[in-house]
Image 1: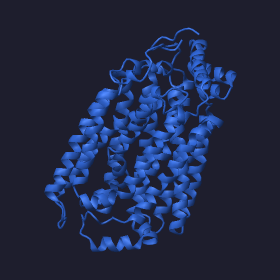
Image 2 (image 1 turned 120 degrees about the vertical axis):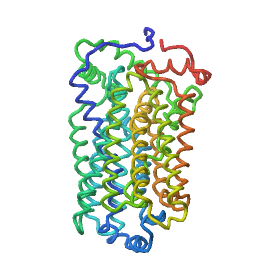
Image 3 (image 1 turned 135 degrees about the vertical axis):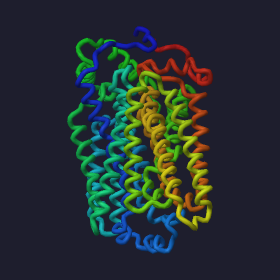
Image 4 (image 1 turned 135 degrees about the horizontal axis):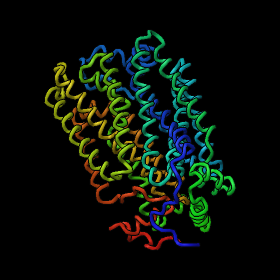
Length: 499
């Protein structure tokens, strides 16, 4: 087989087929985003707390307006965090399921499970039903989060891969904003507004199901399952008539052939020395994304804003503003990631998040302190809101979309599903731990919790600067070349390109 040239581009126009296919696939981000946005708002609704967590309402009545420990209750946080136990199990199983039925059907399965969870939660009459519904939602999120970024990376043309993969995070942002708006209006419905918020999760679930039904599987996934003719037809459809489909098919088939030469399982293969950089990045990037702190801030934004003195409506409006800023910043990443590269956005976003988190910690420490015995002055509360929004913007054009881009593009086909599933599993573990413990951390560490996350962002920014190679514009089949020329990772991989 001929040598594949680094950075090879097989031509082809930006077809309507690939645009529509990627948009429909990226809609998988809606369900994750909606869940992130809906949880914090629902747990701040008095009607929800009155039915399921009346003891939290009693604690609120006895607390000061901006009391750090007002919402510190593990049964309340279990409502949010229980989803991620199921998501953890699904992400580990998704690798094998994907190999058997393909990425498109895994996305379809995820949508159906999320729909079942939304219906169960909307009809819940006790905490058991809530948790069961959350588990269904978790299975849906686990499957779609594993399959969708890889689907986008395998389908997108190399020179547009960053923008298309960013679409997953963009839909995630749409889901967060839609949830925040839903919470604001539902909070004014006495008695059953929380049911509306939880039940409307069925809308993004239906969207992803319909989207998955309208798209084909990726060529790489079809080749892996022996459907060569279907893979060629799918590739020709998404690349257009002026693309060198035969050459790209040869590269894909070579990658799959190499994967099948060795009969080791994908997870066992991950432990081999030549896959060391892939394993490290597959684990580090999703883990670091969780440790930016943005997940727990997104989950508990209404509770956070109430803690610093906002009223109920003000806290929900603050969450809507935060979601709007995040969504806008993702658009910035969409139009710049393939022009300026991944590392530049990582650096800018990291510095921005560090400055904002340190500033929020300083304001809370100076104005609220550790005792929290008086409301924060309105001007300082507004300053905290602005800083949190600027922090969210930094995340929105860096770690938010780049987590999915890097995780989807750096992995060779023979370990792609396994490594992606393992990385998401670790991320779900961290999300579970943080969502379960964040309110307790805020109660214990007070304003220092923001300095804690700033420290993590310092570490991850340095890691990216030294250890992450630039992947802009490099075809997936030629990605091995970036490791062979990297100052550190070249000691683990062969400098030879495939022949």
